[in-house]
Length: 224
Image 1 (cartoon, rainbow, N blue to C red):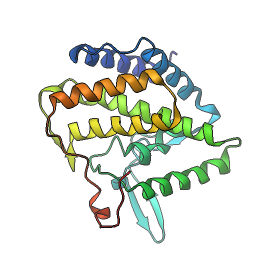
Image 2: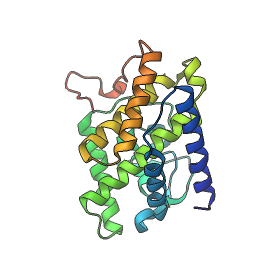
Image 3: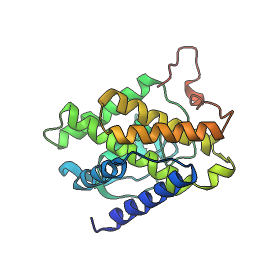
Image 4: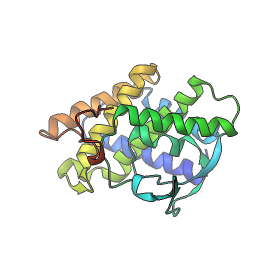
């Protein structure tokens, strides 16, 4: 690994190691090996390079007739398509307007994106697709945690848009744990993530659960 993205991944891993130390967490020996494996596979990109938006969030789009047009391409670049495609699963990690999506909405969004992906890329079977989403989701959850929010979140919570930073951290780690419980991948990441959630939850008492997005707050909405 030698490019700027790879250097950023190395900075993230150093920041993660720092948070483990601050929380007195001894991660499984193979945790960083699994993170490196994800990084190598992500930047190999499965031959699925695409023009990424970089911030495909609900407020960066606009309805024109019956179509949604993306806006604000300041973070766009070419890269692994799953870095954008995982956004409904991991719930918009770069966005201020974060809430919980109903499970059926997540599934509809991911399936619609998959349909567009396989139109241009051959050989996207179920395991390849789910692995790509999981890898990208893990990267986003741990990167935003270690590089954006820590260590300041240890000392003080703060509002960012609709919810707080601590709500985001715990929510996304729970999403990662749920994804990996279904797949059985990355046992060391699972263990380290659970230890981190346990340590943070012990410090951060009374953090509310992530609320459902206001638009979906109906008696029929289901949580993801």
